[in-house]
Amino acid sequence: MNNHYKSRRRGWRRSWSFVAATTGATIGLGNLWKFSYLAGENGGAAFVLAYLICIVVVAMPVMIAEVVLGSRGRSNPVSTMQDVSLEAGASSSWQLIGWLGCIAGLLVLSYYSVIAGWSFAYVGKLLGGEFVAASAQLSGDMFNNLLAAPALLMQWQAFFLLSILLVVALGVRKGISVAARLLIPLLLVMLIALAIYSSQVGDFKAAAEFLFQPDFSALNQQALLDALGHAFFTLSIGVGAMMAYGAYVPDQRSITGMVSTVVLMDTLVSVLAGLAIFPLVFSLNMAPAMGPGLMFVAMPYGFGNMIYGNYFGALFFVMVSLAAITSGVALLEPATVWLAQQFRWWRPVAAVVMVLVVWLLGLATIFSFNIWQDIDLFGMSVFSFLDFVTANLMLPVGGFLTAIFVGWVMRKEVLRDELYVESRQIFSLWHWLLRYIAAPGVLVVFLWSLSPWLKNLFIE
Ligand code: PHE
Image (cartoon, rainbow, N blue to C red):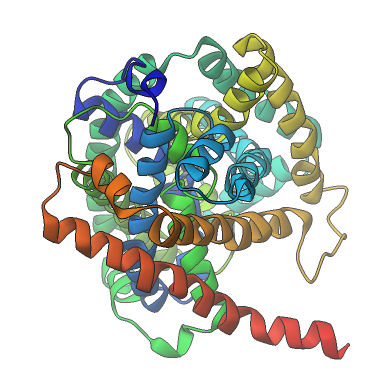
């Protein structure tokens, strides 16, 4: 790579800053809200196991590959792919990975911002004591009332988008990593405390069985595709975010080591969130498969019936909101940096334009909960369809292409140049997983999961 790249100032000097910022980008609604409802919908433990396997053998090698690309290219995902493919003597069409990532990121953010808006709204609701001594029924009704009010949803979504706009426009990378450094330990402590509380008042045994005793008959095609998609979603890969963050990776630090720490923390948060939510779900006789409302109905009920619950509850949703902000930034960053660099725009202007696009796209999700409730796309609501296309298709496709490019197209010496701190064994294991497990793994899951659907499509 030419000197222009080498001489560019490294972003974070210490590995902990990189780990904190990246953990902030990975821990978010995916761990707290989505993991629990997906586990609930897909029968629990078998899904959790499939998800963990996907994390270790597919998503983690791809995440390392994405960080390596970012560290090599040191630019926005599109330019990074252009430069790196040029260096590899490969076709410039590989920049498709960058494009796909930027588009997927904006689409994910369009619904992510709506859900984050719910979390913002719940801070006020809990502080205002709306859930004091609430019944499960009341908690469910409150959630449905929020979904039925498009103007309110729009207001909270806009509020969330403005918060991430501020961060991305100012380019306060340092701020993010400082915030994440405070937030992550606090979130962990709070989740542990909540899991203990839930285990006291809720049905911990049923929850533990549900989450850890696999019933493999529940592992159907849908569940496996959900597990794969969620592994990508939760680690924020396939949208170019890790390329953007990898551009600031500190020198002389083990990328595989840093990524492993991030993955460990991300997984821990998901499991703890599951242990906090499911004991309540089972003691309340709620249906684990009730869908996206699971966290927003179970947790407020739990808080409403706890001493000082409104304060703890408000704090919980403040943390969910902050975790969503640090992830939202990662979703917005790649497209913004691309726009700013491509047209030499001032970064805040690029960020405003992208936020406007996302805000408009987000209206589709908002309306899908109320005025467009009856619209059906392949048996899904507009929101579920967007979620399916991005998390279950676009992210894994982006990851698959990354695995092929880094595993098969880039020269090994170049990769070794970026991963020079790791031992030979670790490097070879990573490269082997990327080539022979991650890339074919995505294909196998796709073929198996989508075959009935494709068959229907063609037979009809
Ligand atoms: N990983 C984030 C979460 O779990 C979501 C995300 C996906 C963020 C893709 C950035 C890129 O909430």
